[in-house]
Image (tube, rainbow, N blue to C red; front, top):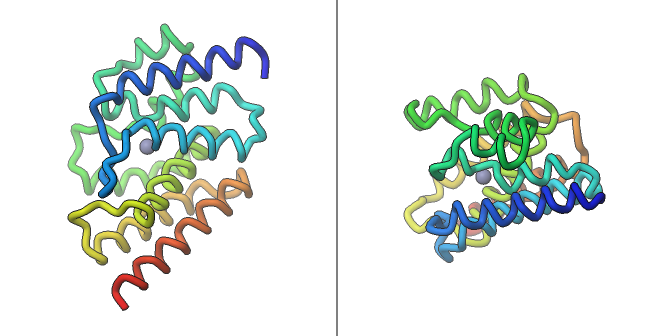
Length: 185
Ligand code: ZN
């Protein structure tokens, strides 16, 4: 990685950690949200052999517009137009009802850029893994299964780009299904 690339990625990590400082993950353990962002960035780094700094920066920043008071313009100024555009591509429109946003994720994923689709797979992998390691307290079996189903449908639209990432998602989904089935037994 060049010096420029390292600067971009470490600055994105720092910015995302600060922006999400008040936010915790849904799961029982209430992990700091930055754990999710770091996990997504590592999944992307491993899947692309550390070759794509822009992708890693966007991985760290992927939830900033959606979940914090961060604007597109701010990301553009700090991290450049490509990173800002990539984050915007994976940002849900929060003005829409939740069910509609979930439906749109399935419907629009295939038309997104390659990098955006890689972020989608890494994001869903991290979220599905969390269902096993630290499930949300108020989710019953039905809701857990519905989430895995939905994640699989989004990822189905993102396939054909990166085998490492797809395999990691498939493994996580299979483990989640086994864990959910185990709970009900
Ligand atoms: Zn995310």
